[in-house]
Length: 590
Ligand code: C2O
Image (cartoon, rainbow, N blue to C red; front, side, top):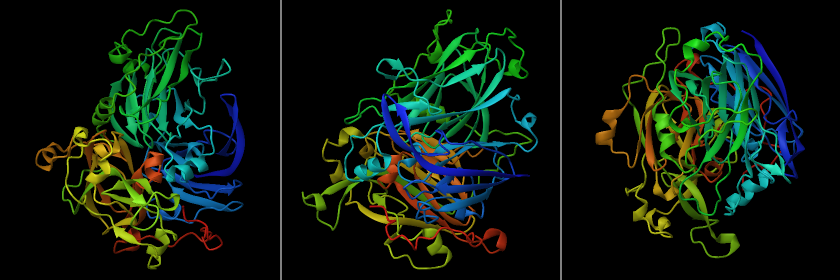
């Protein structure tokens, strides 16, 4: 094993898109930021140098950080942020995970431009992949482009302004030719391929705002991993990926040589309030002109006999230089995401064992994801700006509020936390129909809820507890799906469904044989998902919706996993150079 070292200089720079210079915060002057490439088992040291005016922390999304919660990178949950002009080195090992993860700033909205891929290769080399060895591997990062100061977006959003939307979607930082500046097309992402070769696309959704449909005209994907866990190979002409998720997919360049558009289309809820649907971005898969078709090794095994089907049906053949466009689904098709995610199962493979699903369950939680309103201060709102009602996002009708001292420190040193802590309720305050929108007359949604409050919601788990959680989407959310992300652990996704969860009927449908392991699970639009995880990583772990606005508005909670009985099951002390909050009394968000 090796030590992989990087220096991440966080600074601001102007980027020109859509005829406008926008000031963005980036790592090492690039968007997306640098890719961290490791071999499973490697140690990683990332020296973060903060030359931006913001308080920064970096989260290694999906890296399990076993006994290393200190490096998880969540301000006021696991650490004090790295202040402007300060440095901090994140040190962690990547063990027992292979595939694609990613890193991003865990600072509201800034992650739109502060992110990059983490590529974890198997120790025994590419020939030990449980699928044909690809000829080439490429990160494909989907993002969104905001023509505004993202810190301000976060502030305004907490102030109840909802007319902030991204201007464009991006693939690997490029807007693509569906966007233009005074008639001149924006540059798009181009993947050059050779006929017959196999490409492993490491797809990441780093966008703040939307789930995406990804298609390549004339080609199919074979999905082989998600969230750095192998899945049974599954062939599809469309990838559906929510913010926070990663999907590894093989693509064989087996179409007649030519140019094929790669399109990422935001999937948005069918009942948008004020928003105009965000347009797709397109890049291109472009065949090189040398005619060695079929030369790639591994290509034959994966080449689909009939590579045009489903939504890709009818893609015309390339004529000359005119690229072929894929047929995209309806932008508001919410069921497609449900089917894509239900089709994932974990790979059963002798060389890549997946842990068995725990059968005995110690804790059951039922969590509704919704919206509510709170007064800016006090109990009774009025119409003054100082004390009006603001909309918040909730779990079991409580909206998460960050404390002023990092919870991990308070927990480790057994210091009482000054802020109001609330035990995350194991179920919602009262029962109602979560999914029938027709029952909820416009403008009366709030009345269906108990009064909503803000609190630092924490749930404690004994070391090794098996936790079963059902997330229930509600009509109160107007039909957004919710990608729920748990830090420090992978979750077995046992089942998902549309409508209300019905324990009597739905628990019998749990997949206890080969459920996929995910760090981000997509709770379907007006539906539910049931997961299990083993709370065996001592520390303080954030659990939240990966839509940036839902997170900023409070759809989050914290899981504290207590120490086990031995050294090997207890959290060691913090690193010596750990950032401290003492010289800044202005850290608390709003
Ligand atoms: Cu990728 Cu807490 O987030």
